[in-house]
Length: 204
Image (cartoon, rainbow, N blue to C red; front, side, top):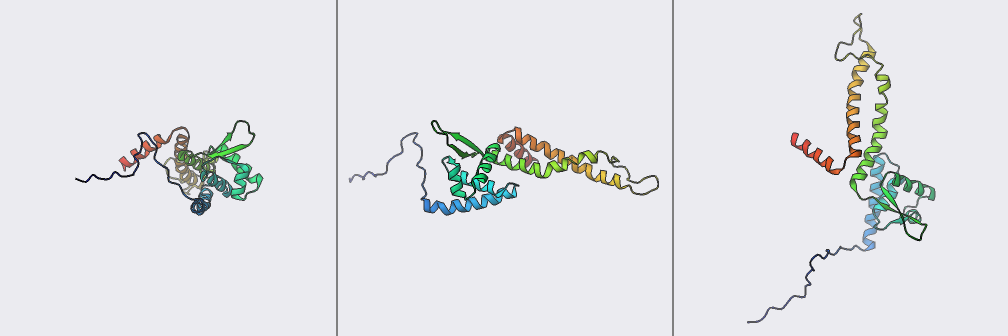
């Protein structure tokens, strides 16, 4: 009986990490460019400057930490704008500074935890949309609180102040509930959110 020829395929050693597929730069370049453009638009929708989205996307699309000069070269932004955006990303915990031993050059690397990105977006929307609404409590509390009672005065005339109070108090209660949820996002982790979503799905 003829013996079967042994294949030349190499077997992976136990515990050996799988080989990472590589993409040529000429293939990756248009994908990276499109990603930077779309991510910038997305962050504008979240209430951030376009330049912030451009710098953030540039860092996300680069595996190694980048210096400010490299960010400027990649984005075409001015030195002042690039510096401001990098510092803001660090303050938002969407990027981190890296200081290498023996070098004064600061490099920046993107935070790749999507939970942190979501928190930054929620915080921006809270500051832009929710906080101005919550600030209205000061004058809403001065309006008559009819608590479901008729909003007419003794002469049978509808009282405008009572109507406004009856309209705005439920809105503020809703805003306060949403604000409490946002605050929970800031102190909890992703597992808390997944448990919350799971309970919501079970009830629906």
